[in-house]
Image (cartoon, rainbow, N blue to C red; front, side, top):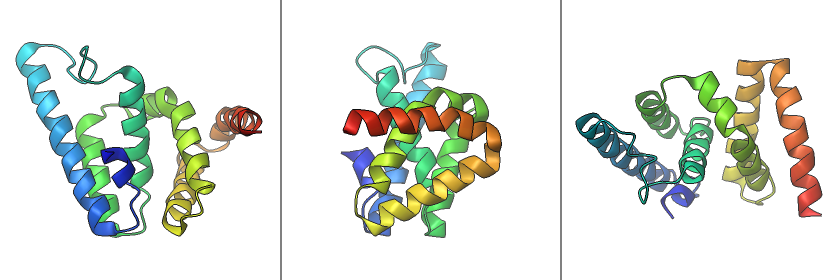
Length: 145
């Protein structure tokens, strides 16, 4: 539910959701430092797929048109991600599926965020990203038909 709120039509709701996600992740990271394990992946806390889903949503919201929302998402991203290129490679299939879902949603806000995110990916990763995302786009389109 919280990840869905990251794409809410109301920018205040999106900003609040980012702050909540950041607070939860920060608490888990403090616990990880205290207990010496990655609590984000600890059994019963967050599966790898759920972690990737959350990171993909957070990465997308960095492209929000409301500057305060985008900045809050970027701040949380920087706090929890050590290596952006490696993390992007890890979450790319889920990120692309989320982008496709948002592009097809009919919500103007979701379409804008998804479009801006694709633009940022191409800008950041260049032509290399097209080689990575096109097979995922094709697979997603085939599985939806």
